[in-house]
View 1 (cartoon, rainbow, N blue to C red):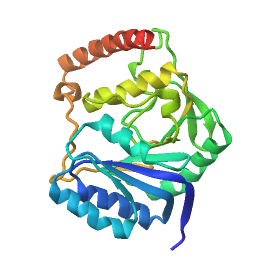
View 2: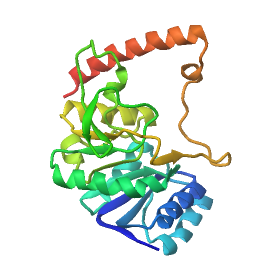
View 3: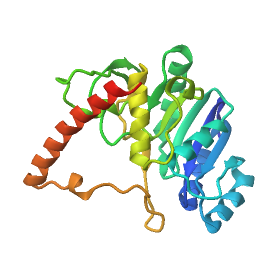
View 4: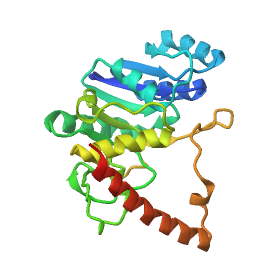
Length: 261
């Protein structure tokens, strides 16, 4: 098998009670021929059965496991995982994703961009929605442009950072701070989103953002993130409520941005 070696990249995976999903992800990278400088699995206090399965995987996949005796939330899991990284670049992937073959072709471009442009902080590979304001950068990537003015009405502009698969510099805590701990997962993520835009982050977004990864949750290992059902319904009253809510979020997030130090 042809190997694609990236000795200066750490693969960081966050995990909680989904050892089958973790095995599937690690197997997928191995099957595609990826070799990283190191693999770090940060576990957030999984139960004994899952932890036992994770330990059994270590001989095959040769990863560094960092754990905690109790569940401390996403912020703590990300912080201790990033603290364990020793390579200059971090490829972050949650355990419920699977890389497609196309990622094998596109990842070298992303890493090359990051190595050549010292101002780049993050390169995003997957999203639920396209980042609203971009300009072409090259090789299928676009640069994300943050527009604070309220007439740029898409509230998704604040989601410059994302917990979905992305490449970042391993020292990004120095510029953007650590993840807040003790908050729900979506609030933890959004706090980092605000920090990115507040501190002038520069980032790229892969244009065909559904072509590189898939997010898959087993019935026996469902997602631990719970989202409001009303936001996902498509009736006319819900459509109106959703539109009003998005405008409220735009104003609310703008105020949060302005108050952030």
